[in-house]
Image (cartoon, rainbow, N blue to C red; front, side):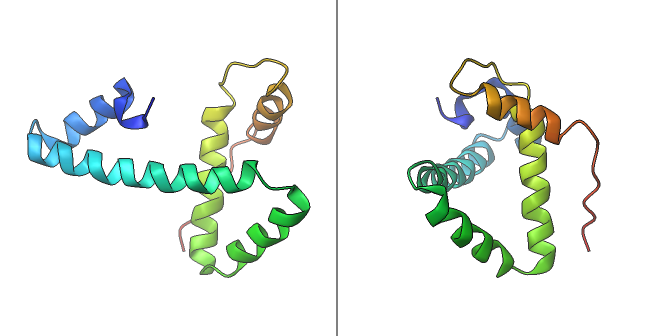
Length: 112
């Protein structure tokens, strides 16, 4: 299921587009493109041994503008808060537990 097929997306975009079908489709197209890029990035992370990808990921992050680094980490933190509400089984139990632990305290990431 694509994110643009979810009820949450549809409700949000209906507010933003004010019922304008062209605007709705434009927003949907942009979100679909972002989802595709994020899916590709996650495939790199899930299909590569951590000793190979982790230093590369850290390098790429450090090469970003420092304000952008802050925004990226903030987005990851906000994503973890949503992920922490995920259903679990033995395959993702530790990941969800860690997301809950990592987001127990609220953190502020100023945009400077």
